[in-house]
Each structure stands twice: as C-alpha cells, then as structure tokens.
Length: 186
Image (cartoon, rainbow, N blue to C red; front, side, top):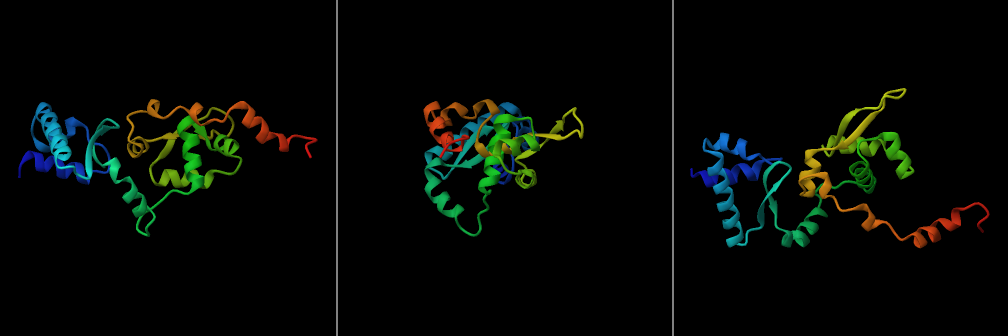
C-alpha cells in the first residue's frame, strides 16, 4: 500500500489530530516526507472537490468535512443517528471556554441555574476537564476546555475563539432589558 493511501486511512479513522512526528513513526518515513504527503493529499482533495478537507488543528492533522457540505450535515445532525449537546450544555461550554479555569459554582452563578449536570455531560464527551483545585475551603475543582474542544471547533488555540464583545448588546439595550427587574418597576 502506498504511503499516501496509508496516511489518508490514518487521518480518516483518527479521533484526534495526529502530530506530524507520530505520522512519520507510523509510516516509517521522515517528517519531511510526511509533510510532502500532507501537501499532496491536500491538493488531491481540492482537485477532486472532495467532501473532506485536510486541516492542521490542535497540534496535529486531521480530515474534516468541507464547509460547503454544512447544509447536508445539518440535516443529518437532525436525524436519529446524530448526537447533540443540550442548550444547557452549550451555554455551560461557552462559560467554561471564555472564563477558564472556572469552578462549577462560578459557572452556575453566571448562568443563574445549577450547572453540575451540564459539566458532567461535557466531561463525559471530553470537551471539558478538571484543571486543578482552588485553594479555598472545600477545594472545589476548576474546569477548562480540552484538545477535543479545540479540534471540534476547528481552532488551534483558545485565542482563536471569537471575541465576546462581538456578542454583547450595546449598553442602552442592556439597560432596557434590565429595567423591568429593578425595584419599584411596574
């Protein structure tokens, strides 16, 4: 079997990005040769307008679906065979991603509801993990995102997350939303 075919097979079955050095070990060739094969595979996928794209993320390489396939994948994700995160889990994941390291109690305070179940779900699917403990009574765990999170978002590092400021409404909108909840409001 040709090295290029083996490389494609490895990248197809992997559950996480594979570093170039590991690919070189598996294929028993040099890192330079692997880099050449990666470039060749990328060019072949582009030439045949494949449904897959080769990307470097999270410290390694992996095959992903083409962005043009998104509408079809969206339809598929609504099917019984696809698995989704609940809105509560997505909210919790956003809080952890932007505020990490963060304790469960902090996540719950930000969301305004208990977040224990959502954090357990995110841990189970490998998107968040315990990063340490706070030096306060009870030594609560603090959480952060994982390499799987970076991989699923298709980003290389947390700095690639979109700025939160782009999603915060202007001060006058926030003021009008809070008005009914102030003491003395009718």
